[in-house]
Image (cartoon, rainbow, N blue to C red; front, side, top):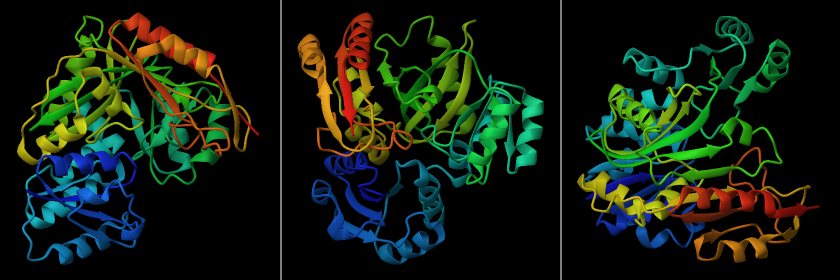
Amino acid sequence: MRVVFLAPSFPPEMIQYTRGLAEVGATVYGVGDAAREALPREVRPYLHDYLQVPRIMDEDDVIERVTAWMRGKEVDRVLANWEPLVILAARIRERWGMPGMSTDAVRGFRDKELMKERVRAAGLRVPRSRRVRSEREIREAAEFIGYPLILKPIAGAGSADTYRVGDKAELDRVIPLMRGVQEASCEEYVEGEEFTFDTVCVEGKPVYENIAAYLPKPIEMRSLEWISPVIITVREMYQPRLNPGVELGRNVLGALGMGTGFTHMEWFLTPKGEAVFGEIGCRPGGGHIVDQMNYTSDIDLFREWARVACWGSFEAPTERKYNAGIVFKRAQGQGRITRIEGLGDWLREAGKWCVEEQLLRPGTRRRDWKQTLLSDGHVMVRHPDWAEAYRLSFAAATGIKMYAE
């Protein structure tokens, strides 16, 4: 099994997928714009060969360079798990006449308006929305949709450049912030709780499923610096309250023509118990959610994704043993981290239920919290009881303090 894997070391979690491919017996040809000598040491043992391209986002150029590089070699799969590259992978597959999701199918997972059109056409509940490319179109869409509304990039990921707009005055303030976005989606703001529906699929059929709760919603996580974002996987995901989301998610996969691989969907549960579609990508979720899923079931989904992608087989157990909560911390102040308070007390309280502690240490420069959910590091817990996992997560959110200056 020979696999071309785009961006094998960036973002950093891609190293784990590269490892997974090698561990299930694939010969991995990596393609990226990092210099070969700059590749992280951890990824090198898993790569059979590597091609550096000038700009990984220049699709036409990459297609020509990779085609020339692989000429005369047998290739079985072309794969990408980073959101900006999923269409590029599909285009290469079509150029080479290889199996895998088509460019049209992948575009339905990338273009948020096309995505909603196709999901809506399947009779599923989708927020009212319009595609907008100019200030005039934004204002016209706002009149049609009404307030509050959401403005976000058509092809964005991770809530970047996403804004909740409560009235016309807020719209006046937000429009200048969107001028770097060529196309956006203007859509109805849905009241309710927000969850994920994550899957690993074989030919569109989930072989592993996951639900995680966002606490609070991502739009609030991205808007308020003082918040410590919390995400908790739900051990008992097949419960009456959440079943509408599971049913919605499975139907969305069919509506969009999902093939084989990871999906990451976000959906809303309204106060009336209705499941409303948010958006979906045909790639794994970021922000360590795959690590959370691994801790939930005591498995290695990096490897199981690779087994599915290469061989169409999922071998890990799917029992859900734990609720796994991750808490992202943000330091108060700017500059370098100076001290952390409350961590020792929390670690003693959490005991064996703490499975990761990855906070930035004093002396490290703060990350830009607006650019990355990872913020200034995280802690992760897991527990078989939801209430205890929730309690420990929020004890970290409120009890651990980080400071910078």
